[in-house]
Length: 139
Length: 405
Image 1: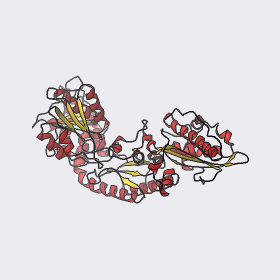
Image 2: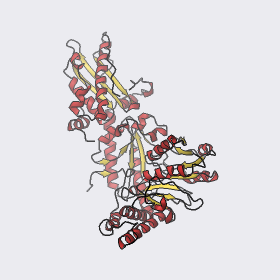
Image 3: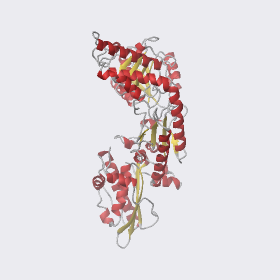
Image 4: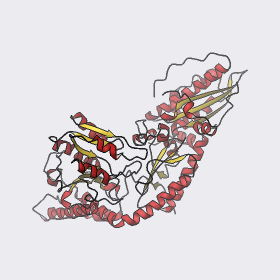
């Protein structure tokens, strides 16, 4: 199975690998997937309280190349976006950008889930209600 | 100069030995006769070549040439051996005993037999990948007609206690079939000393061509018969119809002869490289060998690198090193290796495994390159792994409620 150049580049030179302080109120952490399934994604966002803009994003991922590339891409996309804009990122955006093959669609779903989980974690920490998302269907 | 890519997937298939190709070539272009053509020199030559190859194959496994049935490969051999016994011995019983770590060609054949009214017992294996002989004996019933246990496992290289299994089979008057695909040509196999009744193997795992294999079917003590699975001209003593693949058979014969000649030297050299590879990779933290290290093929090792995912790992070097992983992501099924799970490995470790299959043409230089590339990738991916970070912080991964997917 041949992967796209973009995917391979994200795998080989992942952007924004790292850890933000999850105790910090301005940091939202999303941890999705499970070791048994072969994918665990942790995505973190740092939000400027005043503007609602995501100023930093970091990830760590246990998974295949597509999962690593999807999470690396997610951090790139999130930086500079407002939290509301971040909510519009869809799993198909990853599929298109990285040209994921059908068996790897679940990696894109995981990335979308990670974004939503990080945003909800940030919201709850800051006294807002968690947004209820529809269950993702793929997996 | 080191030539890339490096091939370390010899359990999947081996390259052909150039000496095998050389032996085969005339049978494509000059001596292309049908071995069943009795009335002209083309047929005679082909038949002579097949007879010679049959002797070469028989010799490697200590059999009589008449006991060799040429097939298209081990999958066909597994089907013919198991289904053939099930049908031939239907009057005696309908129960077959096998193990959960068998190749799919055996397991799916057994599932087929269950649909046909057969009964199959699937023995669990111990953590080292071997079956428990007491459990085997306890599973035998009056209706048992066949025990089907592979000689050596394709994923972890574990060698089953085949002589002990055979003794149990004999004691109870049950036939023993073995899928010896990974064993023949690599370790000594003697159908008489080891007490085998039926055995499937293939040429392309021992430096021969793809598309040709053999089924050993015992002729004496006891005389074993299998029901043909294909109707036709009644070739191969009526057990396997179809025009013989003469060049392939010649290649298989030559491959067997070479294995016999080279086995001792090959084993010595290859196992030394395997040990070097294994020991170097085990210097990495949280790296574990899967399956018995004691009862194991000399050219195989299967290692799990905890907290990195197998396919992600392969992607770090698979342009340059050909390897397999037990990770689900390398297959379309999304299920990790059932063999590794049968050893009791958690899904996480099963996802983190690499299978190394060295071969006759593996070099020391290739091993050095591989050790370096894999070690670097494991370290790099662990830096990126949230599980590794948690592990390093002393967090028990089992204490986390993972989002179910």
